[in-house]
Image 1: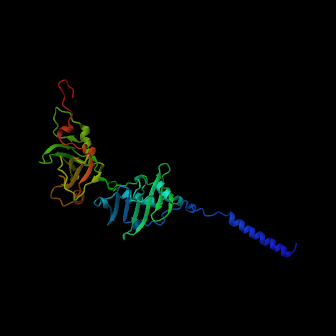
Image 2: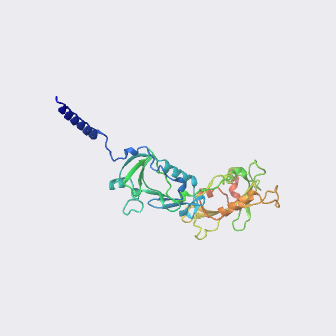
Image 3: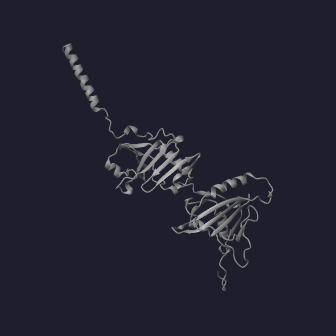
Length: 359
């Protein structure tokens, strides 16, 4: 074979090999497989977030950082649940991509990725929109959360203004979508053993209706001046002392609205350290019989062992500041929590025995 022929054959083989390489090599599929396992928001600047908006088909929640405290702006700037906000931001920061594909009209409808406010769309086809902003109001994150999978803890996500949908390894199925759910609902946390005395008063006259007292720290609470012929319901006494141990609210009333109706329960809790908590509880709300209003005030009275002429203590200063915070609001509590309190002496007594010895 002539040398020239060999060269031609080698060139032909090289050309065929190159063609085979380009034909058989993996081609981009357009399904985002190269993003598999990567974080969707790898550079989320957590410390620059000063506002969060959560918009759904029915309500828009606005959370804002005020100085160094988060507040629910759409609920009269009442303090927000910081732990819940931190969990949300952590979820957004940590979510990784499992799939990626292009969105079209069918995908948007099927995966409930229609933006809130879209006309003519069923609410169950509307996404939840989460927007994180910085101090200048510029968006740091703007996402639409579509359908989630309850079995795999995954969610379909579409960045606003983009066309690529992502399936991420975080589920936002139980994301709170009402302002009341973002409130810091823990109002009081007072252990029963810290309480020295509970006095139920007439809301109009201030006269005492009953008194419960611990003779000393560590001793059981007792009903003061209990009728000898009646048996005391000790479980009810203990329940009243336990009522403030994990005291949560449901909501807060509009501070600019007319004042609610007068309370029909007035309960004073006096602590061994001199703290005094006064709770004024209203009747059931006309618009919601399962809830009622509550007002709380705090004061300080130095324990007898300290003396009234003693200089102001740190506790007294704390209580004064606490009163400024608590007394500024009218709270909404569930009816079952109101039932933890007792309005009069009879609530602590077993029914009187009948003539046959039965109650």
